[in-house]
Amino acid sequence: MIKKAIFIRHGESLANVMNIITEDLEGYPLTERGMEQVLFSAEQLKGLKIDGIISSPILRTRQTANAIADRLNLTVKIDTRVRESGLGQYNGYKLENVPKLSREDLGMESWFSQVNRMRSIINDYEGNYVVVSHALPIRAVVASFLDLDERESFGIEIRPASMSAVDIENNKVLSIGTLLLSDRIRKVFSQ
Image (tube, rainbow, N blue to C red; front, top):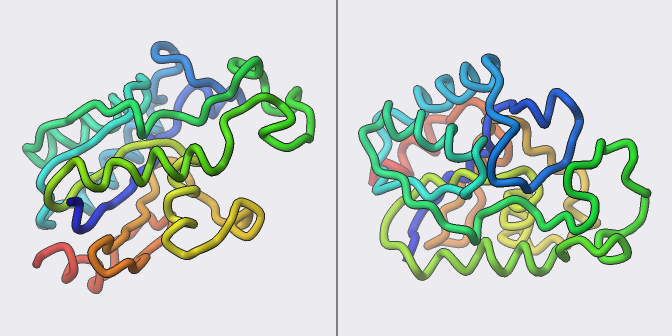
């Protein structure tokens, strides 16, 4: 079982700059700024007890995971369960062109599907992991540990290259969307 996890959103990508939502596997790489963000996060992770990195198969997350793995001398495992939210027919749309309706009404992947698939990785890995994913799936899994639904968690912001730490073993959220890891988190991840 995963005991502790740091969920990291990929760094800024071309899709973010263009304001496009996409679940495409290729295309929309990290920007130069995005890579700088990722390297900053990697520095924050140095010295923590981490057993590996799990990454979404999408290019921007693979680039993020590989950059962190290079800095921490870890291996990356690709797992489709931590992929981007299913966007249905709106894949590749500019965000402002997506109707203001519920995800289900738009034919997109449901909130509960995202919670379930993100949480399903917990029993398949052993130890402490960095999980590189996307804003909405990370918000969904963190909210699930706080017993919040989609509406209740609406104000949670998961910025590019931000880190959300969860002590899964003790069902405790340690941080949400932070760019700097606290001494408390460092202590929990050094055990």
